[in-house]
Length: 233
Image 1 (cartoon, helix red, strand yellow):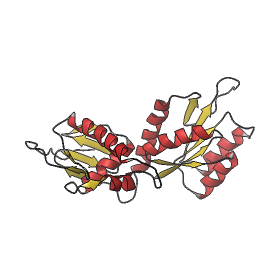
Image 2 (cartoon, one colour):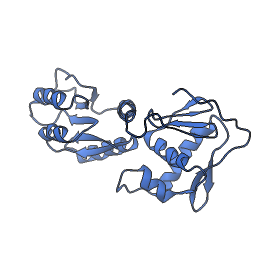
Image 3 (cartoon, helix red, strand yellow):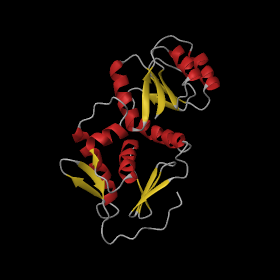
Image 4 (tube, one colour):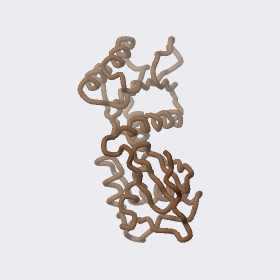
């Protein structure tokens, strides 16, 4: 998964951001000093750098210029307190604290799609089952030719099911393959997310997800469905 460097002093804020980022397919890497953001960008590719602009007395203009120079492809997200601050900095996303998580989510989804569209090995690959189509490179799902909106986590769960559609996937397997490494996830959490996927798919046709009680989930062919012509994603 792509990395986002997070430079914030508030531990609770970092935990919130880590949760939001993980749900959209990113790994949050905590950075304690703004100078370390630049240092890490020089040595490790990052999809974005998120910096609390209201903390510290560092040379903010120099930091932005250096980031743009050493990591031109990385998005810059700044947390900003309007009170006591003047001259909004130029960046890819400016979040005024307290910020609306929905704004960050929308930005992350665009960033995720741009980042994953060029992943090696996934380019041009489309998974199909019944009237369901999944474009791995574009991270898009269609059912009966109509778009299905999923989060990055839901996309990964459905992808895992579609890769072996008739095989029952245990909840533990889904956790190991779809959540970041070392995440503490309860089996009930898997059930909740599968429920969201099921509702999104059922809005466009019969139920394709089979629940095997005590074991996990699998896909199954619903009767009366005609596979659509391949979509142009």
